[in-house]
Length: 315
Length: 280
Image 1 (cartoon, rainbow over the protein chains, first blue to last red):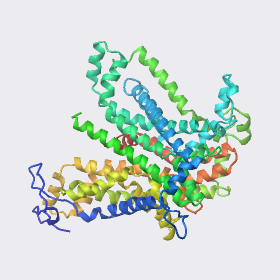
Image 2: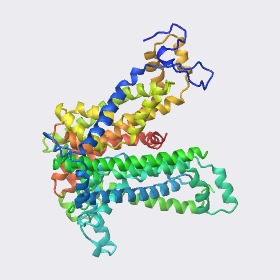
Image 3: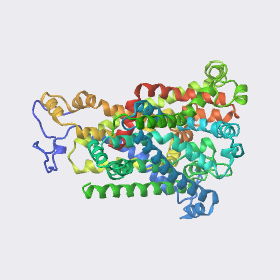
Image 4: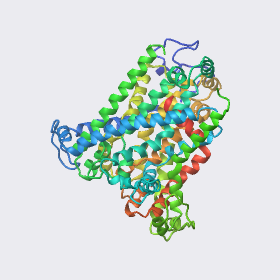
């Protein structure tokens, strides 16, 4: 460690490349040592990048997780496209992700607008609505499994209000089970989206809203022309985060239906798990995981472009 | 417009009703966990327990109960793995982010980009080779192996949050400390790190909850081992019970309890962490 003895000595390693000098300070004064970053960089490179690269590599092999393997080109991907369960899992993943984005953002924004100002109970309600976000989705999903059960609360409620003919085992119905999973996902994440929008709403200038109201603008008009443009960044962040979260849905599927009935609710992540760790088809599982990764990376790229575009337009 | 009017009152009532509907699952969870098996079958799920009983909890937590071993073991390994990860993560990510934020070289910006991209890389693809690697190293079902994997998984987010804070911190502190003859390590550990307590709190909360609640990685690496974390213990235990919801909900509540207790004290910080930490 260099002790500087009362003078600022620019360390040699940091001084080779002069900066444009944005401030009055001499350029290139570094603090810390470059090797302090080494463990973090190495860990990320090995555990995240190297492992992901190897995973992508396995997607083109017929490895079972043990012994030798052969290159099979795009065979795994062709198999994914030909296997009805795997095609179904891609479709289910896209459905859940899209539904998750739409409903969580709509409800989250609604609650954020309702709890933004004025209401006396807003702080308590915010805390209560956010609560499910911090809980384990496995634990939460089991509560909902009971709610959807044949002798569970949902059916009891339907009978009580005279809709007894709707009574059924919700999670055992192939066309409804996916909606049930979506409902649980949305329920748990409303609070998460709500706090992102609340942070955005705090930046909306109140005077502008009041002026518009004085000029006779309706609630919808104020929302569309003042509130929504201001919270654009929050909308972008909330949509991308919920999209990524929705695409990698796993906990709720395994807990609520286990992918059933008859594989009707399998998702890409649940297929990665079962193909690899239950059936030992490493190559196939890796192919499913690679498809998921490509989906997410494309979305992240699109989001980057949108954000950059907005920055260039001086917004 | 923002005065409290009749319209506000109507809105308030509406929102409270909506919130009550949203929170109904918690009521069902708590009341069912306090019922006997017989009452669960005969009474309405919305009705409060006629004679609240803690039998389900006692059966799970008493040292003689058949499942108590699993519950305590789940709690202790969840605690060990979460705390271990958060400590290692804070040490490594704060140092790394500090170097990136304070270095003016181009290289450090490019290295920083490694973390930015890693934030969106999903774990599903990398987990397969990691599993093989861990298996050949004998790290399957090993809490220390989990700490390494979780630290790496939460690293990008932590570095991202820390650099945001470091960039906003003026260099005056470091310059003053340098003049006083402090070494670089002293500057970082005695001057900068304490100033970063809010960032450290955000990192600890976000990473801690991510690890504590993680199921995907935990079920792959720890299932069947003596170090299963709580989500895996709950998943296995409830799966083994056929429709014994009162007992299931007791274990669900026990698993939720530590986070809920924490939430009561730190809900404001938690909400800020989620809204700000992910955004900034």
